[in-house]
Image 1 (tube, rainbow, N blue to C red):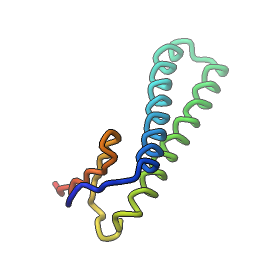
Image 2: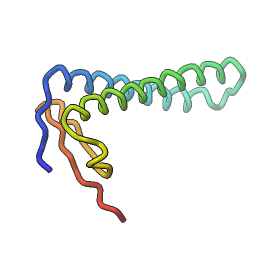
Image 3: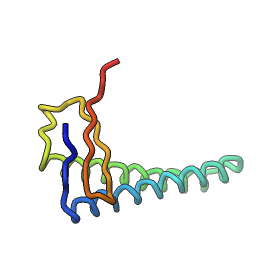
Image 4: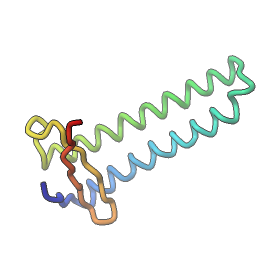
Length: 100
């Protein structure tokens, strides 16, 4: 399957969601490392709060990606398709997932 050219707006929307999700993942890694030793209810509540934000960011990323892809690819016709977003080139690089 060939690379798919997407609009600047689509690329920027996916890129923003991607970096937001990555930021929350990095924050969770740091908080977990730094605060895990002093576990108490306040720390647990804080970790749960940021874990919720991280999950929301991951869901947002998935929804934005799916919305963009739906304009170009029928997911039912390509159930094993894996894609990589190239923000610089404003493209989606589809890769057929090989069954192992």
